[in-house]
Length: 309
Image 1: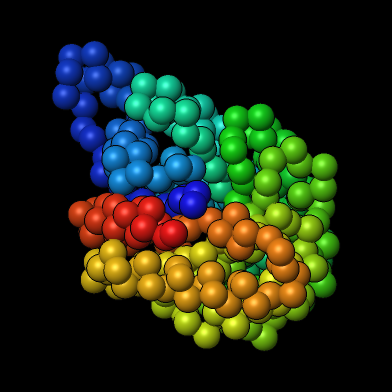
Image 2: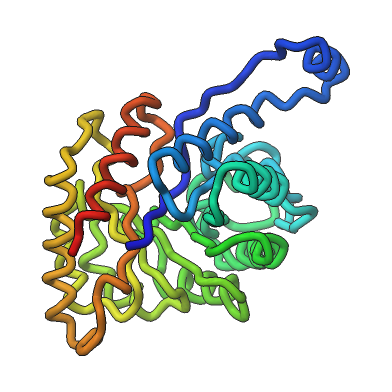
């Protein structure tokens, strides 16, 4: 079974140590986050993850994007949102460089924060009416579409993070149109990650133009219900990223097997190998966990996936 991550990893930065690094730091050219990316990628590879992330180390999921788009000043909207340059491409390329040395052919996931989640996290001071202005959401989507086009040749898959959707604060029809704008004609598989309780909105999520729906099942077992009606592949979150407890391999294996048994009863997947419709991953990002806890959760998750017959 293919294993991956939802995105973020604990951030371990490095101060300049060598003479060359100190000179670069003096000249403002030293990048303390390169070590954090390397640590995140190597830990994921060591744990056995198949499709890794760059660790999303440069800030929270919103900051990474709003800090690099025109129309934002920090998390304030002051003008029309526009795309100016690739945002995560350089970190993806650096991740690929690390993989070329250590990765044994494994791939990278490009991770984009979705338009509704970005809109919900900023203060609108100009150009748009408020956080739910459809023009704001669609303009963010247009910018994100250009970002996806910029990275798609370098990644095995793309993930769009829209955690805000489970709160029901945003119109799902608007959200669907925005996501569909981003995913149209993309050459690699696209996952939509929505954490929280998705049972009540799942029929709508099934209509989004994505290949994979990614949800949390370890910390929100009620979500297992959606496996009875899912029409796409499922990103199966099977370790709880809100808890510092490292789940036992057999505990994780049992949850994955429970998910498989439910998928076998899904009429949309009759006569198909349901294990091919599952990607195994954590519930959500791991940025806030101690690094040893995050690593051991991934390691046990991979071990559990390999025990599935």
